[in-house]
Image (cartoon, rainbow over all chains, first blue to last red):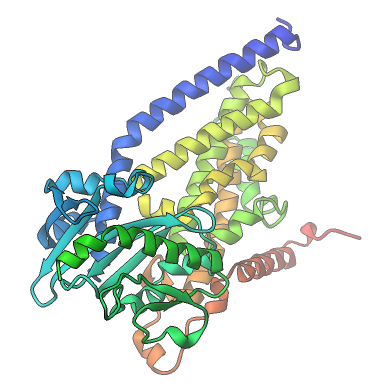
Length: 235
Length: 214
């Protein structure tokens, strides 16, 4: 056969592409359940990290079931719409954040442990420089003081924007206030340089990570503001 | 396979051995440097990366070698790319399913195996003109040659940069109490380049035939 003819070349390319596509889809389908599970475990680890509980992929499940005593979905008026644990865990912020405020499902996870007490954990999601950033904020039961925070990123620049995923960046969030003395929602503002240390409504931006820091600021404001009514009612 | 040639004849052994020393893809051919710098801050990702590259080079070599008489020469580079890309996606998916933590550390570099010059180089230079078994050995050999350098570099970077080997702390706490500090600089990519440079220097001073004459 003439392997140089046009017909042969076209046929060869077409058959090869179909075969490769079949092999790849098969592999993807076979591995999907395990991958989804890994992602779920990671999410559980992240939720626990927001209350400073370190976990490994092995014990995350157990710790999560032990300490997350309640999880439910609220709406923007602060009313609980569902108390189904699995439904709450499965809420995808990527989809929710695109909906109108009134239609959003807002998940809340309640954490309880001897010695630490009760905290509520709120998931957040936004845009960084190169891709999505996300995180979990844990709040004191008063609904205005942050107890802990953890942030993840898909592809921020290592050493610059990606610093938001480091403990040194996340620690200072503890103790910040998202409502001012008059009870008005303020969220947290990004401030370059020192100044922010100890200030209740400000956090220090990452040097060289301006776009990421601004994304983080917007993420906090947008996501936390939708919980405003719920947080106020828990005071 | 060839008529009566033993599986590990002298010629075939050479295919495995040469890339480890006198024909090393990183230190002699200077290919695949980018990923060698990026994934060698710790041993674990370096080992996983080495195994991934080894698997891709070996299987891509075998597949291309099997197809070598059927591939239309005008689209041979594209055919090679499709085979390599498919294998890399499979490796990436497998890592995400079975080694999630490491796959997060390796991030984009697994996907970038596709662009690793070692693989395309071996396909063009070897697999297109040789039978599957020697092609397989050649792939394993070159993957291993790449891996060996990665692991040597990662060993020193993790030891000096984090005081650990494969995640286990080896520098005792008493050293730190006496004022010893991990070298933060060696965690940064430029130090990997310097480490590779030192390896090349050591190798060339031991094997003078590698030194190019000007």
